[in-house]
Image (cartoon, rainbow, N blue to C red):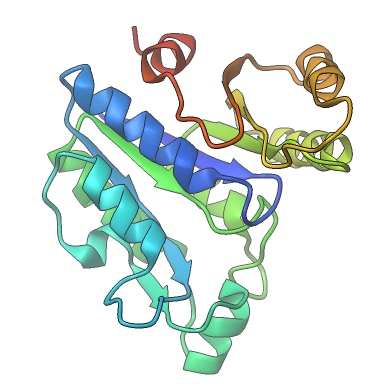
Length: 220
């Protein structure tokens, strides 16, 4: 049976794509068929044809799949997804996303799904990013950008994940502020408070050790 993971983060710009790419590369190295999915993207760099996150996920996997399945909703402006959708006159449909996921799952052993922004970023009037994870019935990996304020952000994100009945499979410490004081103590505080294992600790500018990540997520 195909397995799935939903990668979210404490905020935008905290390294969700870095973590998702590391997971995909580790899965590929372990001999699995792995594909990345970005259900909703917003923002396309000048001169590019697709969102940079979507391109990075595709390059890290080893499954060929149509762009419409890997990225069902793509908006050019780098703004909140629900705002971009409203401006485009588009309603983001969970069933369309679920259908794309199912087709990817038919091709792969593992589908790594990357959200946009944080767990509660709206995708419409009634739904947010966690509703995607809940509709797909996949566990969540939380990427914590280790900087001042991340304790509250991480614990609030975990509370939101738990309130939806979703499983927090693990979390990633991404040290995005190399000048942060007490970074080690902050990570230790999260170790003591988050009810899931820390599957990776990414130093500033470093790459993840994929084998440890997979083992801690139960992939063996």
